[in-house]
Image 1 (tube, rainbow, N blue to C red):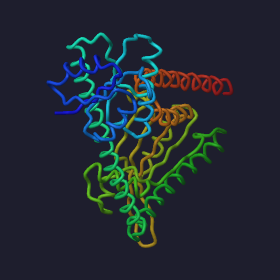
Image 2: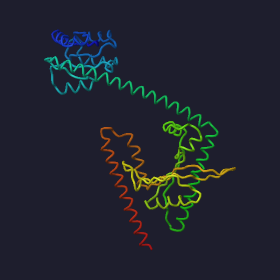
Image 3: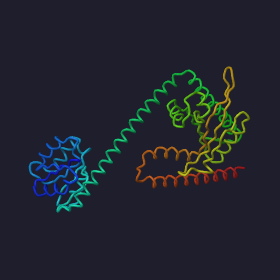
Image 4: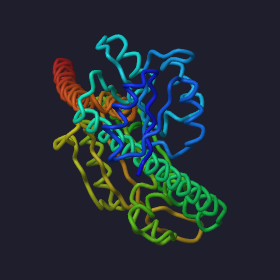
Length: 356
C-alpha cells in the first residue's frame, strides 16, 4: 500500500482523514510543518502524496511547500492543500507554487478519496510521461551522436568527397545555363528573367539522416539512386510567368533530363506553400568521363520566397494552443501573396504593351 502524509495541527482533522483513507493507504501524520519535513526525510520515495494544512504553528504550509521545492520533492510527491477557505487568491498562489489540488473542510469522505486517488494517478501518469520524454530525448541524443560520427566518416572519405564534387559540378552547370539566359534577356529584351540564384549542397549529417529515416542503405550508390535533393538550387523570379519560362528553358536543354515535376503554384500545399520543383538529371564533364547527376531546382517569386522563409521560422515557434489559428493566418497570407504576384504581373504586362 502507498503511504500518505497528513499534516494538520488539529488532531481531529488528522484523525478524520486517517479514518477516511486508511482502508486504501498507509497514513502517516504530522502536527506541524517541522514534523512534516522530518517525516518526508524519513519516508524518502515512499510518500505517494501529502495532505497539507496551510495555517500551522512553527512552520506553516507555505514554508513546507518552499522546503519541498528546495529539496526537489515537489517533482515526485503531489501536494493537496487542506483548507476551509475558498479564496481565489489563496488557491491561485498555491497552484503557482506547484500544489496539485485542494481538499476543503468539512471533509466529505467520497470527495476526499476521489481527489486523493485522481491526484496520485494523474501525478504518476505525468511522471511516467516525463520519464518517457527523457528516454526519448536520450535516444535522440544517441541518434544525433551516431549521425555526427557517421557524417564525419563520410566527410573524411575520399569517394564521398568525389561524389560531392560531382553534385557541386551539377549545380555549376545549371547556374551557367541560367546565367547565359540572363545575359541574353538583358541584351535582347532589356529585362531580367530572374532576380537571384541560391544553391546548396546537402550536409553529410542531412544525407545520413535522410537515408536512415527512409530505410535506405548508407552507400554512395544509395545516395545517387535514392536522394534527388543533394544538389539544390532556388531560382527567385519577379513574376509567375518568368518561373514557367525558365522551367521550360531548362527542360528543353537537349542534354538535361526531366525526372520529376511538382507544380505547387497551380496546386499549392495545404499550408499555402507555392513553388515549382524540377528534379533534373544533369550532365557533368570530368577529366576522364561524362556522367549524369540529379539536382533539384525550385522556382519561386520574391514574395513566395519571403513567405516560405518566414513560415519555416514561425512553424517551429508557434504555441500548440494557437496552432490552427496560425496555420490559417499563414494560409491567408499565402493566398494574398499569390494575388499580389499576379496583379504585379498584369501591371508589368500593361507597361510592356504601352512601350510597344
